[in-house]
Image (cartoon, rainbow, N blue to C red; front, top):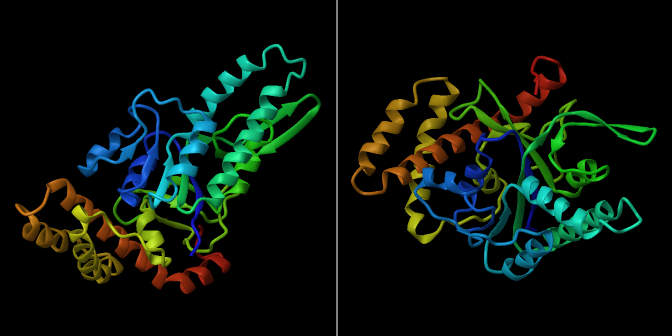
Length: 304
């Protein structure tokens, strides 16, 4: 199975970075200093760029080229902020250029070059980004309507960058979600860009990219220190599935497992395993109901 180039985006503080740490605890994270503090929730330290590392697009490209064979995934965290800094640098570099769009032209070229490297990498490459609301963009007398999308400046990139990825998942709030109320959305949206060329995702699914990729057949072994989790997650998810299907109380199932593990494993790692088990059960429920949900959507009984 070929590696994936994907983008996840949404408002600030909705769990985009934490979701990537859960998915790829042994991945390499390209992130601004302090950008990975949410990983503390997991009790796990991910590998990342050193403090004060210059996060230019060219440097990111070089990291992907060099580290792509060493890691199962490379995550470019908060690419929106990285591009903002790149724009400032390019504007200064091309300040004396008579072509007033020189900086923007170069930015487009750099992002396209990065896209090519990401798509050809031997590992998965994911960008996390902030969210831009739907809007009209004016250039002279031309007016273009742009759907809500990953936040990136420019006239072309807001539309072209999402089109370059294998899938684009927006983080949205869902009161009906099982477990954590923020979920990924790749299903159609009239106002926001979403999509999945690989056809591996439900329209909405738990904020757990690892469980999604496992369900789609991608091998994602856990680091050796966390290998014990897999058996626990699978057994717990199997016990949870009939309970969540019946909309029952999951607490007794989870507490029974917690009591067996307390004192044997790091409490944060136990919490992590329980969260993965909940997400695996929720995702399997969606897969089991795939055809009935499709019929309900097509008949207008169910909204995405």
